[in-house]
Image 1: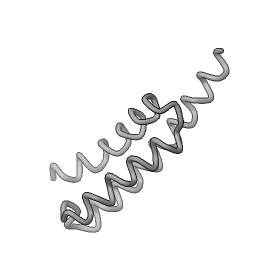
Image 2: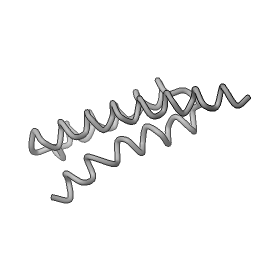
Image 3: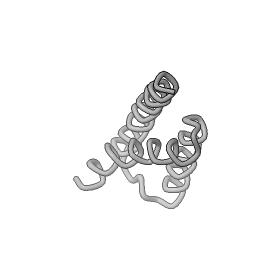
Length: 76
């Protein structure tokens, strides 16, 4: 149960964090995807539900980071 909750929120937050650090939402998404792939190979994604939630959370993070960058561009 804990893995499902973490899979739903951690990739989303990582994309936002990496986007703020690198100022590029593509780089933030790629870094988060690399971490997800590494955790897959390490054996932390033992069910398909965790993997699906990770991907959905990654996509949601990308969409929100894209909107966040657009809002920053509008305000400057």
